[in-house]
Image (cartoon, rainbow over all chains, first blue to last red; front, side, top):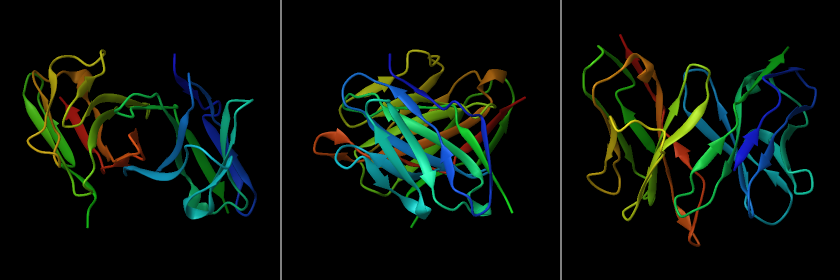
Length: 114
Length: 115
């Protein structure tokens, strides 16, 4: 069965420090992996994706993620966190088929303190 | 310039009523989706639809039905609303690139409260 795990409910980081939000996946075949961010009372905004190619993917707002096939991981990273990065982050995997339905992780709340 | 829009933003109604949520995308995308986000922020696919195929998540009650008058719209109809239907409902759309589904873009959500 296809699944996505985000092992941390919350990640706390001081402003200016690097941040990592973890994601592991289980999918048959080649995964399409995504990161989305949700600010309070807002919809989901696309950050970045991995389809194929370079394992290091760069996205919006200075975020990047590294696809690691052997560890089945797709961790989200940023070298220097901002208070405005505080939000709920979702990892998702496309479980295939022509419709591209996404399975989402449970979400990780990122809190960046000044 | 709104890419994916939903109306209404908030919907408060009584148990047993029938309601609809509208979704429109102006991105020219091929596929549209409905997701449900529960009180714990967990997101789950309800439907996906293009002009050829409707895929229904088997856990979705048949009180929920998508209606697509054209490629740019996918409305969600809910009959006989129940307390447990209270949630935020998100519409999304995505293009097909090279035969594969690409990035999904989400609407702002509709917060449904059933009293």
